[in-house]
Image (cartoon, rainbow, N blue to C red; front, top):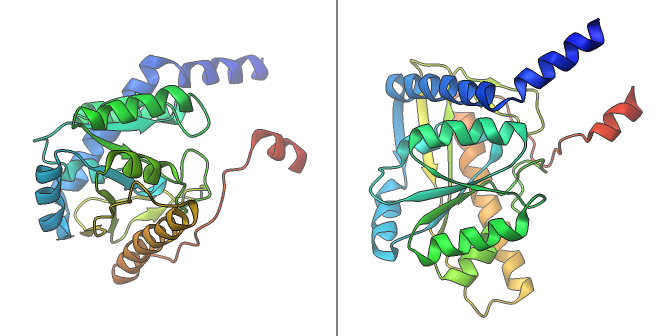
Length: 248
């Protein structure tokens, strides 16, 4: 009976209706946090002029810092987010659609080919794209090459965005997801724009990759220090189901 109940609960939590409901709950909670937080914003003054002049950009956000960033989008230009087809990705997709993002299904692991085509077409149509460069399973706060590939091919500027809020909880998950509380102090920061030359070699791309990762991590971790949050160590991966079974 207990086994049957577990299967039923699992089925419910993976249903489209349930993920849509959770996405809606996230949207309204994040909206409350956004509205009641005393925000200190850095880098937005150079971010939107470049977006306006280049007509689209590539935005990267760490997996654990996604929740509040969409609320700093001014909605004047379209923005499409790459979202994992897995269950947590469906919840994120529901949330982002409520904010107004377009959704591109796929990840670096699942549906990568079709997603890459959709992302390139978005940039060709002057529609910005958002990529989680340490998703969907880590290592956390480590940049994969995907955003740099699109920056190189398109000539568009690549930015990193992050935030921190005082008195937040840090989830004990691989991505150390920040769970912010309302009525607190917050900091939003954006990296400088990065343009990847179309003739960049593999070694040059690696240097850009490390530079962007280091800057985005410094902005994230220094904001956390200012607001009194615990230090987060980059590099943790999500455990696979197989590994979990082996550990039991």
